[in-house]
Image 1 (cartoon, rainbow, N blue to C red):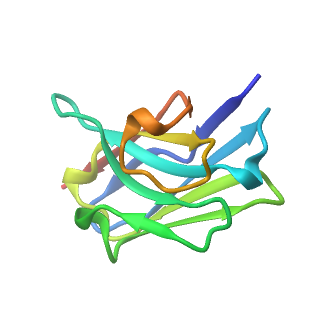
Image 2 (image 1 turned 180 degrees about the horizontal axis):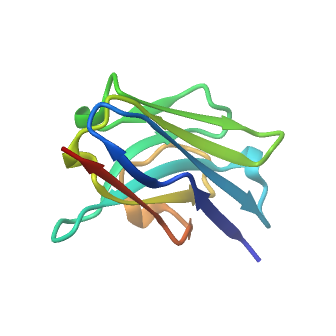
Length: 124
């Protein structure tokens, strides 16, 4: 059974930092692409960042470029999202997702497995 378990969310002031983690089990982690999606209240889910199976290729949505860093440790079956210079508009539930094809996709429908989400709240 595949499980993706996020952690690291919380409440932070604008300008602060948080590091999200997503621990995966039940899949061949070193062959899947991973992504962080987010969904704010009343808004559609959007991709924040993604990383291919090896970590060599990453993608960031324009609104987080230069502030967020996605990384992975295939020895620990874990993907991370380092979030710096946080803004109130980053407030959302953040979900990690796995794509068995191993390649980055911006489309949520391409991802096979999803975590339960972790809340990130940025106060102004």
